Length: 211
Image (cartoon, rainbow, N blue to C red; front, side):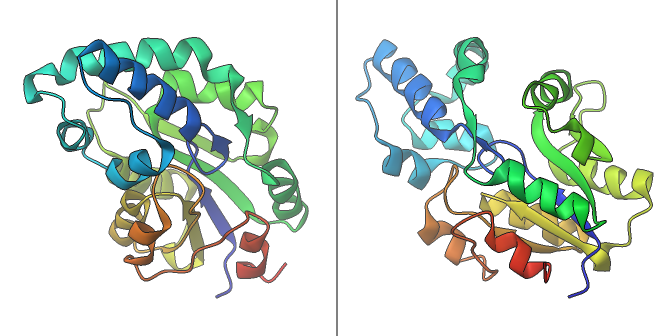
């Protein structure tokens, strides 16, 4: 292995926010005459691109723009109700003390990502906090490539930690290794199909790093 760099996903990986997404999505479904869904159903359906995910949930394809705006409004109003995932702060501290470099790579908007990382007091652990910026109109994989280039990180030294099959796809596109955390936005059965290690607790990431 010999990993010297660590890329963390944010939503669902470091931030325990899947429950909030379930609650907000239930509200949106009920407002459109659709039945609510539970956490397991949410994990079975969630994925990227988000338009396809919404169609799988029964929303009309033409409703995506309004749905996205409503979801964001409701989610952002309550996002600080979320906690970090168990062990997240301690793991980040341990990795930092070991001298390994860390960064965040997220599909969350940059203008929202940076302040929330600061809110939870984690900014000192990261050499970069990389979210999406509408001005660039780039996806997570392209943003990740720009992150590697900006930091000068060689892919063979990098481990990416995420909670969805899209994180695996991003890791593949970047040429970096990946472990997945099945306590976020997708069901473990879906993550198993990626064929990479699953960590049941974030502390297990330390074992991947030989710490």
